[in-house]
Length: 317
Picture 1 (spheres, rainbow, N blue to C red):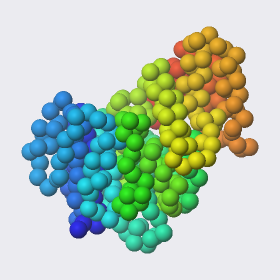
Picture 2 (cartoon, one colour):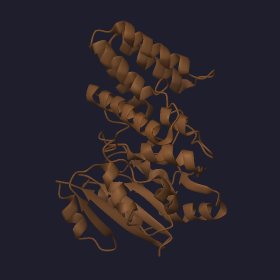
Picture 3 (cartoon, rainbow, N blue to C red):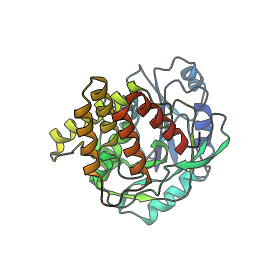
Picture 4 (tube, one colour):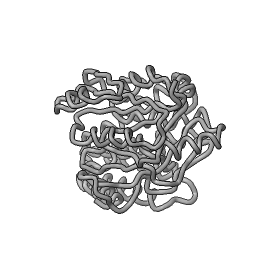
């Protein structure tokens, strides 16, 4: 039985997935298996994956990221599950550094690290993801739910398989995208999270990433509805309030939808609820979010354009 299972999910990332898998194949640490799930690709990437050796390949029919992770994690045999998006890649010492950390910190059931930004051609860019210092230790799941912490993206996460068996499977109908969001909230409720400060991988910025693509009204409403469905799921299964007042994507989508319905007064109330939910010492990210929300109250179209510009500027695009 391998110590580590690497989980790679792919959907139409034929331009990048072979590079991602090459970064797995060249790891200095060798006690691992690699599961690759292709979720209904139509760009030829599944056919390319079929020609590879040394991987366990699964094919789904466009069921979404949550289903892809469920399919691989339920079959994985490793003690630890390491996640990798098909458009990212790892440093050659990533697994070795992480296993060394795991051995020193048995109290941690999950591990994360930042990623260095690269462009669509794999060339280095300034900056890293996440932008701020990664949160560690026993995290408050409701603060994770609201997006208060700085947390690594999917390719910077690993969780123990016994923890996955407690918090999985991911509800597929809620998370066709953003499945890492589910894992982050549930991990925070279940274990301590370890952090390695080194950038052990690379986050590719290519315009289709969930965090760096240009923001549209459809994306705002998707994020808002995802937050509502996830809140209802958590309340039904775990109890608690799981308030959406301080949830920025929900607040932004709500303000936009209310303004488009001509309900400016209700949009202003939603903005004020977000203001009241902020802590006593707001940081630069909090002030940026307030600016985006206020502009959306005043002019929905400009609010979306400014928010998109602000997001891309933070990633130095």
